Length: 356
Image (cartoon, rainbow, N blue to C red; front, top):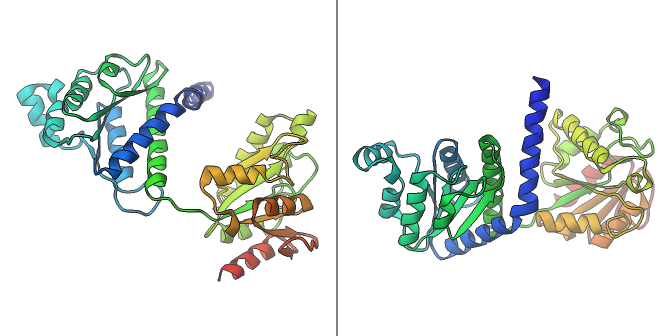
């Protein structure tokens, strides 16, 4: 069973990577169209069969309710939930008409209509998009394999180029979550405040080129300090890892170590929001340059001026200052830092005191 579990995870990773490599522009385009539609007073309508019906409901719930932000509801409707509509239309007109009939009743011109089908061949999805297009909707096929016939009735097709239904579905809900995030951020933008944390010597004991999971040893008091910090701040690790370019270990080793660090901290109720590492001996990403902090700020809409950089080296302080952050050095004195703390807990208490 262990081999089969790993094989399925391998397939999942393969498909998710294809989203990054082939579908980013399509996802971006759809997000922009939906945002523009909402600003014009339109709504999103979603539908599918089986697991795709569940995806339609899932995405709808996260638009109407929330994805991550507290904000007003975003108008979206799933056509898969009203059993009276589904059964009466199926009984009177046939299952192929189950979505087209509902679209005819509730769609307004300019609404974004998303049909979800892993095969691209479902007759009721095809007829639904055909009707939506006829009535002036913007039609989207979220499909798989080679796209199928449904793409003939879509203004935009997002095709997961894989052949196994369960993994297409995994990609579809991932795409749905990305869309919800992009839509939410565009309609309700807000800056985050973050604490950027050096890794070795700040979170874990620096033993020199730490990359093996068995070498992970948390500094005493770190868990308690991070628990306090995460109540208000986005936690981001930024770490120089020149051992990669030196040939001591690989990127995969660093990423595995970060997953293990996250796992160990999560068991204690501490959650790192993201990890950035620089694999080079020189370059904009290597501290004291601010590259990693600037990249994170772009990724997560971070307010650098009101964020902090915490580390145990002068290069950490310089990176923070170069990014426009407030800075704290731990374990030593540094007159260039905004504050010098004996350990992470003292640094956290100082930060929280500044905010009170």
